[in-house]
Image (cartoon, rainbow, N blue to C red; front, side, top):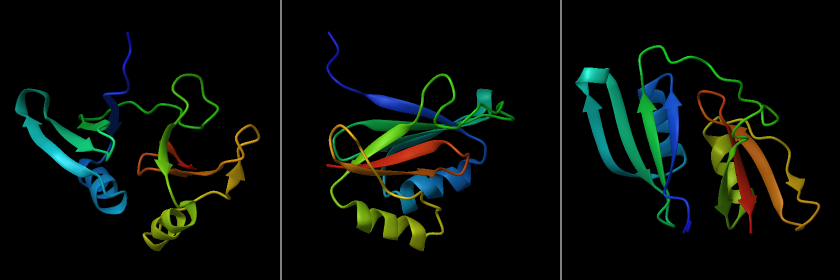
Amino acid sequence: MLKGTHHVAIICSDYQTSKHFYTHILGLDIIAENYRAHRDSYKLDLALPDGTQIELFSFPSPPQRPSTPEAQGLRHLAFKVDDLASCIKHLESNEVEVEAVRVDEFTGNRFTFFKDPDDLPLELYEG
């Protein structure tokens, strides 16, 4: 029935700041960018190398949501990486705060968390 993840939708508070973060800092490619005047909203479709997409939306005055990894609901978004250390170095060189590296107790793989401009928890998972 399910074949994979097509996209993850993210609503941001500052469109230009989040667009810069996801395209220039995280390096995602822009598939399409559309402004929807009737909603005063942007929709930016971004591509990851495996074909998964992120839909970045802006809306006027979106309500805040709890964003800690332990909050009820969607916990966080995790990205698969080959070299965790180089990714951390890249993020930190762009003034993105990164948590200490942890080790998955079941797989032995290394991972860490950081946040997007709206404090959405994001994970880098090596392996």
